[in-house]
Length: 311
Image (tube, rainbow, N blue to C red; front, side, top):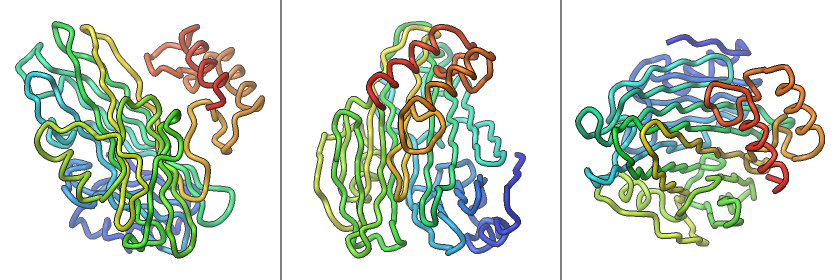
């Protein structure tokens, strides 16, 4: 795996986090003063906490759990992506990429899929502000039409004090959860764009639900208090070779990630449209909005749909 970071202070952050010691070594990405560390070999394999997030040089870890799960119809068991074959991992500056190929619990041609997860970290314009955006391209590698369930769980420990947080679904249309530290009013917004189901509540309850059995999320919107998190569920019915792109992410003290926020400044306006149009006209890879490997009218239509909705 390759790693490159933007600031020399990153080495100190990694040492404090224990990554350099190798006990739970994984990989890390950085932007400005912000650092996001993926713990575990392979990534996301630690049942409890598996992520570390520093917003700046204050060395406060504000993330606990960031994981992806899946379920296939035939196997009918929620499983961590980390239980699949070890992914290809790549870490460069502010971007981490994980690729699973021909993965799944079934035999060749049955209940199999390809998945590419891209996670990007953006340091905020002021101290104690950060944004994490992710896209998951999920493609059926099966010989027949299959229905897959995909889950994302985010458990933040804002201000490194999990016991006094509160969380609720603040916008069901955007599938946006808002978590708040009741002592300082620092907030985290967690987004599962297009998710069919969601649930907020105790972090341990959500982990237990997604680490065993075949439970679906309950659409519990909160509010809930204590050591809390948010989870999202997408139902993907895919023909052989068909793919879907899942978008979302989380922030601290910034608006939640929005697919049409092309310049990542927390607003959707003409600047985003102009930047996308410029990338599109130039055939830049940044304009591959649907992540199918091509820049064409499908990308323009997908971006326009989000932009017109203001998100």
